[in-house]
Image (cartoon, rainbow, N blue to C red; front, side, top):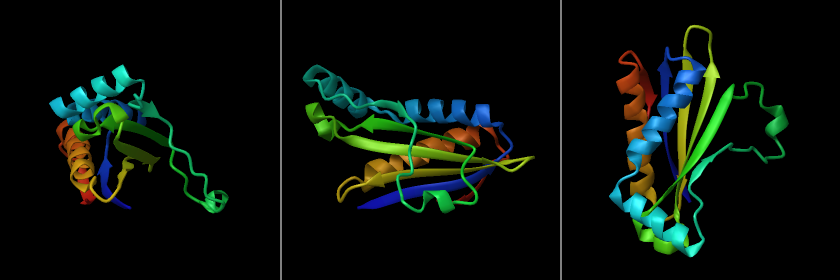
Length: 139
């Protein structure tokens, strides 16, 4: 099990960050993702769409800096076909007053690294398109 991440700072508002994430996730869906999602829908295995990530860790209550906003999206893979396999991308946003700290996170299995990296890159690119002053601090 692995993951791909990107961290960035932006002057976009929380609401704008949510919209950029939505747009970035849509842009990240290629033809294969659309076809894989359609096949999963036909087979009754569609898991695509937005969700709110949860922290079920027994240590979650010790987090002294929880995100101000978080959202996830599940993006189907073509290779998943009708099974509904895909990759989840999470966005966590902290409001720091004059700027927002954004963390993008995509967990993946043994063979899902390339798909996860593509999704993280496309969503991060949506942020730099929307805010040319956005500064990627890791990724």
